[in-house]
Image (cartoon, helix red, strand yellow):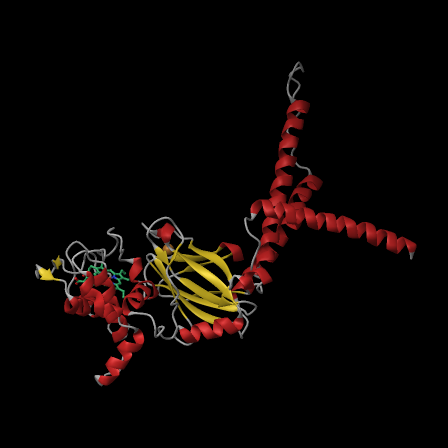
Length: 388
Ligand SMILES: [Cu+2]
């Protein structure tokens, strides 16, 4: 009895000390606490490999210096020892001991990987699409993020914010529209390639919200693209917000449509990121894959089919957004997709107002129509007998 109590308390404080030490060393390598349930698995495996490295480095360097001291030629006569041919115990030892040390890396690496691949059946599925240089998201009810634009970096490159439910498994089904990207959530210690013409998936279990998270309305995590994909690769990011399940449900319901009190200009700026136009068009004047939207309205465009001096007005915008492939601007690639069937009439109108507002040629009075709210727009559309 006494012996038991003694040994278990000694062991208890030893393991507590070890656990504390483990947490402390972990904090030297990870700049945030792992915010998904599988993060700990990755962290522990990382630390295991780290300790193997540290111990073998010290052992190896120690042996090198020991051998230098012990076997250096010095004043000895040239009485070399003949090279040893075999030493079976030694050879067995250097095969078996590393094997025992390495097998856990394989075992935990492989089971952890399999676990990250196979999501629970009740996981919340979110479609993720990568393209140069933006992420777009779509929920099970067809909703797309409608949040405000988020600026993560100092440049003028807004990134989307999307939401995931806290305490419910989340599965991302991912694909790329162009080159290989990778969806990387450092706080979750998880990353997966996003590949054209194929779906890859990953899942995670966002940790429940703390009281502090709740007071802030959710917890934010940053997502990066982790596969070099061109000029604006470093701007290809997203912000993930972990929210409560009721808030998640309410928000994706709201995101299936635009807020009735928002005006068309605001909707246009949301469509710009939600539909990924921002991945090819800047609003700052910088040239990207496509022409900047700054001062596009009222400008004239030249096309590879010989059409030239075409004035960019509302109708021209509408036609060339919906049927982009009909004509290609000189000096640009053919990569803009046709958007017919992809955008609602409301979204097209809102985009046109938004592009119009970005031009110096537009006078404030010309923008009155863009101040119409979504509600007014829909009522007008109804009275004209067309659906939105
Ligand atoms: Cu990328």
